[in-house]
Image (tube, rainbow, N blue to C red):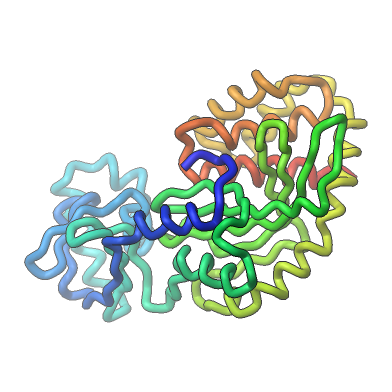
Length: 310
């Protein structure tokens, strides 16, 4: 789903479609064995590990993933089968998609907060299915932003709508978090700000779901900071914007695909102020084909760059 405007009802339908075959299980460690870093067995049944699951089990076993992926399959299996025998926990929490694919592997401390639970909580809070939202969603990550049209303002002739953004990963890519958000109406660029008013909860508790109304209130109280910093960004010249962007790309450790998106964003947002630099990242997040997590990271970079202005 591209990062454009939709409704909560449509997001809910998409979440249901993605999760229709998903289920979880506690698995005895002694039943687990590996054929490679991409294939494992639970008892006599073979399963394919998705990339996120591959990385998480490699980390769990203490084997550097990049090294493991380069080894021959026989050596991969030998190392993984050796170290799984040293696993101290008796059971692991495994998330499946269908009977064959494993999408994530965790310890039993992991408390899943699924996307449908977030949407159900929003419904309880009065956000109806026809609520307009911006969403980037795939099987690994959800970025859901709710603009507040009552707070709309203009910067340099562009209409801006602040609001609340929720991000969540059912497979452990990130914590469930709530942050300030700003939508640039002219091109539906979104920006997520990491600020002192954001709230993030690791998946060892479902506390955030019960506290969501209070979290929204705290985050919403700081939305005016977006407006002030955006105005300041227009007044902040940048002598060499491309060099500045390259420096931010390194600072925030962007991947090659994300850097390509930034180059695409710059082609549409080029200019000589921090406003242009910030909007390069938020425009990059809307590039077609980006994973939802990458869209979130680019929106977050835009917000963090903006947050550097005082």
